[in-house]
Amino acid sequence: MNRYQRTIKKEVKISGIGLHSGKNVNLKLIPTEANTGIVFIRNGVSIPAHVDYANGFDFSTSLYKDGQWVKTIEHLMAALFFLDIDNLFIEIDNEEVPILDGSAKVFIEEIKRAGIKDLQEEKIFAVLTKEVKTTYEDRFILGKPSLQFKATYHADYKNSIIGNKKASYIHNNRFVSEIPNARTYCFLEEVEFLRSKGLAQGGSLENAVVIHEDKVINPEGFRFEDEPVKHKVLDLIGDLYLIGHPLLGEFYSFKGGHRLNAAFVKDLISQEAVEILPVSEISKEYIKA
Ligand SMILES: [Zn+2]
Image 1 (cartoon, rainbow, N blue to C red):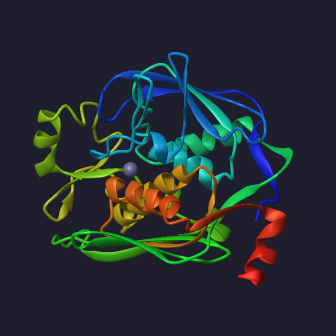
Image 2: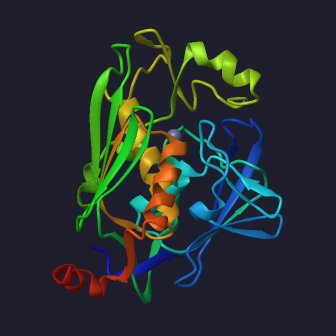
């Protein structure tokens, strides 16, 4: 467990197109002080990466504040969680974070290239202290207290290419995990519908895996055989980070998506199921409980 809060060593610029908007966008990641959190800045408006500002969950997670949107934040948020980055300003000059290769891979590579910096302040976690379950129809997310972060996704699709599979991420084993490299996917049958709703305008085989019946359309195929399930774990991790601190707990999602992820994070707060604690107090607190 990292003891100190982290930011980046120097500015990082990343450009690309938005998956849904199809628009060009430039990101500038800027180092900042301890206890700032992750904060997007668009047209001069500061938008904390917090579930309080989460708004709009159609095939991505978006933030909205004072007339400004920042859309499809989840893969960048997951990258920051993977790298233990607690504090960062993210300037963005258009409405949607670039999709890049559809995973967290490029964000992680670019941030590592700039370097990561420990700050002087102790790291602060959101520690899950009791069981919480959020249900919608046959879908649910279950959180259980633990001193490690573990996220599991359980997919249950009718098709055989995804089918009924589980994938997990454990933060202590992140250096061997395939989760950060798992790409966005969609079904060919959905593409026309998404486009008619103004979504997936920037989608292509460069930034998404497209599945048709039981086949992958992309010539390279999957990066690993359960890539779609692993991508759902990536999305879950990015959305859970919207509690404003790295979580400690074990999280199990059965068929969840962005909307249920956000509802779950809101439940954690409204049910007072997390304690915000500096790292030095965490084990002690657990013994008391
Ligand atoms: Zn995603």
